[in-house]
Amino acid sequence: MASRSLQLWYKRLVLPGFGVTIGFTVVYLSLIVLIPLAATFAKASGLGWDSFFRMVTSARVVASYQVTFGISLAAAIINVLFGMATAWILVRYRFPGRKFLDAVVDLPFALPTAVAGIALAAIYSTNGWLGKPIFALTGWKIAYTQLGILVALVFVGLPFVVRTLQPVLQDLDPEFEEAAASLGASRFQTFMRVVAPELFPSLLTGFALAFARAVGEYGSVVFIAGNMPMKTEIVPLLIITKLEQYDYRGATAIAVVMLVISFVMLLLINGLQRWSRGANAR
Amino acid sequence: MAFTPPKARPTLHDPWYIRGGLVAAAIIFLALFLLVPLCAVFYEALQKGLGAYFAAFGDPAAQAAIRLTLLVAAIAVPANLIFGVAAAWAIAKFRFPAKSLLVTLIDLPFAVSPVVSGLIYVLLFGSQGWFGPLLQAHGIKIIFAVPGIVLATLFVTFPFIARELIPLMQAQGNDEEQAALSLGASGWQTFWRVTLPNIRWGLLYGVILCNARAMGEFGAVSVVSGHIRGLTNTIPLQVEILYNEYNYVAAFAMASLLASVALVTLLIKSVAEWRIRATEKASTNQNLEYA
Image (cartoon, rainbow over all chains, first blue to last red; front, top):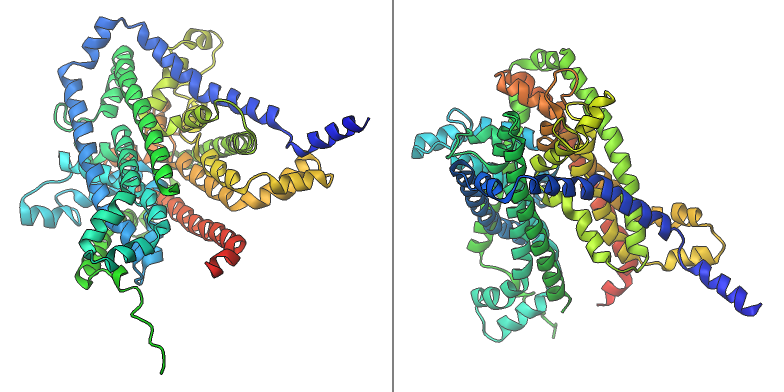
């Protein structure tokens, strides 16, 4: 009897609802995400290896990979540089308007990509607010060139580096910097040898997140890109173009390449996040 | 003799030119990429005056787009809310094998390009898809119809609420729930009276982000919608059509609705973050004061 009541009491302390919640989670995840993704791979496997390979390596597709990955890389690098500066001033400095800037950083998460796209196209076209003076001063066209794609991809990736770096900077104990300085290190040495190694894992995470987001981005790019095949055509646009021509096989093949890249990026980012969490827990 | 403290943390002060330079660089960067586009939306919308601005909303196609966007968000957000709470409860409150795999799988939709997110449903339910012939035989339309738009939106907004809640509930642990249960509360009572009040700001934050994305999703919805005016156009798709017709005032007027949603989202997010931080501080204040 005693053991039975003890057992009952113990059972009460274990929270209820595991079966229902895990069951619902797995079923919903399977229906919305896993089964559709698996079906895509199944569809692609019906294409046959030869025709699949031919479809994903045709000249126009390869050119779109170059545009997408090259410009995404450039955008992620710009986001690392300015994201680091932004995170640094938001955490370390006090100046009027700081809270406002902090809130505004998330705008690309909240503003629909199509809205961002038409706004950027309007600003950076040769008669826009910024496009006009830039064209007059340097002769560079931004909208409807690869630079336009770069602008859009910098926009969508902007919050990632700032938001991954900010909590790490916040938790960085100033004592280490004081110790370095008291031992005679210059501010630059302190930054390079004490601060930078601490920030590096999260910087890399932010870079990977911004890059992954840029690679898949569609809405903000199509309005500003000009969408010229071989020059300013991104991979997601090419998928849509194929769909509009009822070339489902071609669209599926390219989509599978993109999916595989997405999965690799996701695993990489997970690994990086674990690494940066480990580095910060030290 | 009065004790004069040494100059406070001189080493933490970057030289003035670095401070100034960094602040200027960051502000110019954020202004160019964030503030100017935001202002441009409202400027372009109001360029021909308030009359033209409001006339844009008189168009029946515009009104249909607004209704459809609200409908899609009204389905997608609650569905992902229920999923998010259930997933966070299972993942944060219990131990089980393959948990980290499950968390990674929940993140999947974030990694997938919006266009591909739409395409996977076309391959399932489109006329060329797995279930295409079956659906056609029964006269059910999913692709190029509202159900497809809802599905694509469900997919792209899938992780938002779960991702917000899982770390929050993990950090809070099980102690309070166990106390409630041992005092005789039922499972539901424990959830409503103990867990929910603890996570309410994080929950709100997840819901508004999910909603902003649901209303603003473009790529995925664009693939499955078919762009049928008055029937399958959401606000972002209507913006695209108007823009491509050079009807800039109307395009930006519709866009200004979504930009306003984004601004409200950021505002609520700032308040929610501030509240989350305030609750965290309240619980650790004692430790901080003596640290």
